[in-house]
Image (cartoon, rainbow, N blue to C red; front, top):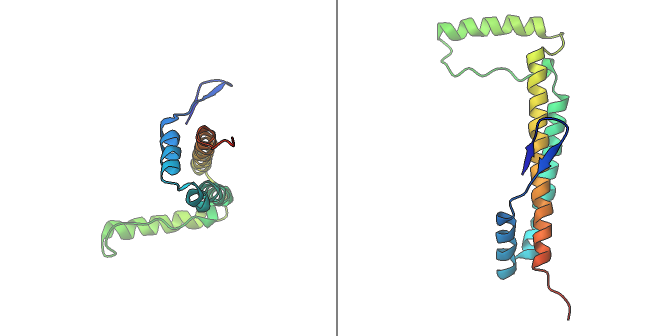
Length: 137
């Protein structure tokens, strides 16, 4: 878990309870090899890399169409569709609006934060596994 402070200094902390309990259960139930076979942290890392690439590559002209949860016969829906169509045609060749760019940056920051949390969890889990490692006599 990471916590940001205002300014250049950032503090990081971890809660060892979950990784310690997980490693204990894996050791007692002799499931360490099965857990390693899942390659969970690698798949989470790959997922966040893909998410980052998808958000970074998103452009205003490649936006998915907005979804409206109303019936097609509704007057308000038809009006909204006509306005959206006119606005979409006007913005088709233009650059991203400041709000869209800010949203994209916020999404990228959130993905980076989640990725960093999982990396810290993986590091803490690796540290906890050292406590239960069998030593050769």
